[in-house]
Length: 150
Length: 65
Image (cartoon, rainbow over all chains, first blue to last red; front, top):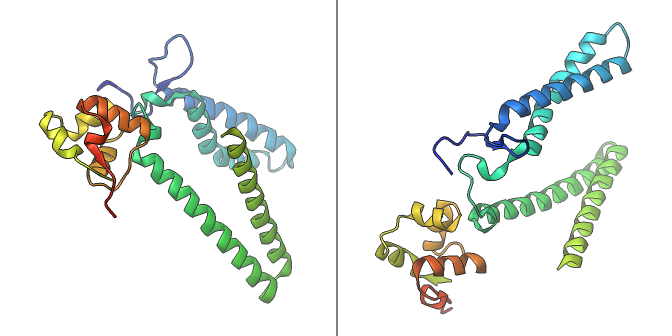
């Protein structure tokens, strides 16, 4: 690491890897959002072409920039990055937070499903139950994959 | 797990930041290990052992309880 390291890291690809990744991520995000915005606008009514384009462009842009940055950046060059993040305590915190978040979300979804089914809209209750079951299925699948790799 | 990392690090005239940089981890990791709040992974324990210049069992001790 050097003192001149850009906050948002350097490019992972290309012949000049010392270039900052952020401008490239912004450009890629703008291009991607424009393409998706035009596609969405063509899909809708002609009268609302530009409003559809603007809404879709604005909605997609932050995610497109973030996705492009994740693809383009060399993570070891991000300001404050460490060589062995998997051995840092933050890695443990992340794993614990992910685990806690998952189980809280499952519990809340299950509880909400029961409440909606009993007292409100049973369709919403069923939909929430499907979400909870899907989350458990993904969890079981992930567990089996990890177990298989061990 | 208890450890004597803080004393050993100071005896080597290393700051927490310097040790963290040598180990390739965050300073918070070194702080938490020294306070006994975080048990390092085996590769990290070996790296600490290498930097301090002592075997792992001279740095880390099992809890008596």
